[in-house]
Image (cartoon, rainbow, N blue to C red; front, side):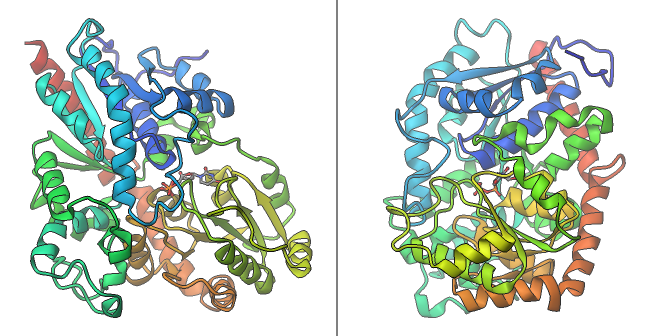
Length: 498
Ligand code: UDP
């Protein structure tokens, strides 16, 4: 296997970073991208992964070939925490209490990960000294072990900066009695998220601020105060975003955290640093937990430019049978081509409530293509794709921005409602269908996206897409922040050696 040329000649002696993502698609993908970027800088990386996710990657991707290029990279497997459960999806009904679900996942993970972390950081496996730990922001138990091992820690936060800022403000919102809010207040403006008071409505806040979403035993004020405190005590916060997109919000975040590294969009950043000749192995599909259906690319090849709506709701969101039917009818009614990802577990409950009407089956035969999992990165970059109906997951949003594809946002939970507000109101690169799911609205929004408002959306999208690509190029803000992060990781390792 070809070993990529090293940007500088120093061997991997002192630098060894342990990376630990939440075991979910939207967390593993950017953290694998970060791992590869660190490998390119001659930093040794150990990536913690659950055995079941490791098996899925081995089964469905070229991940071994991808990382065989870096002798300093290895996976360290954590035994499966909850047998017989698909780890990459939150349990059904996750929307009602996403924090509770994250708590269940982290608690399940904690029991199997803690002994391994201790071995790696403190015990006998510590022969190959870990010099720094990059932890997914949700894995609070891992911070405690890093603290015990007196190890430098960086927090990797997967959501957008606008979402992270709203998390920081949650204790304040609760103290000011703005959260929880009532259903009839949904369209009123939020007063206590500085920097967003002219456009952020209660319905745009992270989903767990809603009464019905907060059916967990988690004390929100305590949870987010602890998180703020924990993050303040790290060596820095790594964010998958860029200055030109979220600059004013990043300034707010800096008022709380002394050091932040906005180094995104990571998938594009990695491609840039790999260079054209080396990037083929490192697309997003190389970290897919599902089998990618490449057949959709040949289908797209047959379609005119910008004629297809790509539809995907990511790796976790579920739809009720009724919602699926409304979206389906809207897609067929719009008369545009559509490529739709319907994951095997996407329908909430026992599947479709009634037989699919003939006109939907006919319309799909004529203009649709349905897959279980798509090579999303490649799909969005395809010349035939003109719009993206998305759940506004942060990775999907960034991927759409880099590819320059305007969006219709149908946010599901967590950070997605705030992402979709920024997409529609601030960046003006898409339309927000939040809290509605009706075939007429879907059809109208598709017509707006692909026709009536196409030019205005494309104009702002092209500008932001250009800024995204500039930020990860040499001299750009994300490029420079990654250089700083690498320098800081190396300096910390030197300090640990002394
Ligand atoms: N994705 C993909 N194929 C699909 C659907 C999604 O490769 O058919 C990838 C997508 O490119 C993104 C990730 O899955 O990188 C989803 O992450 P996101 O943050 O958008 O949403 P989440 O799954 O965390 O809700």
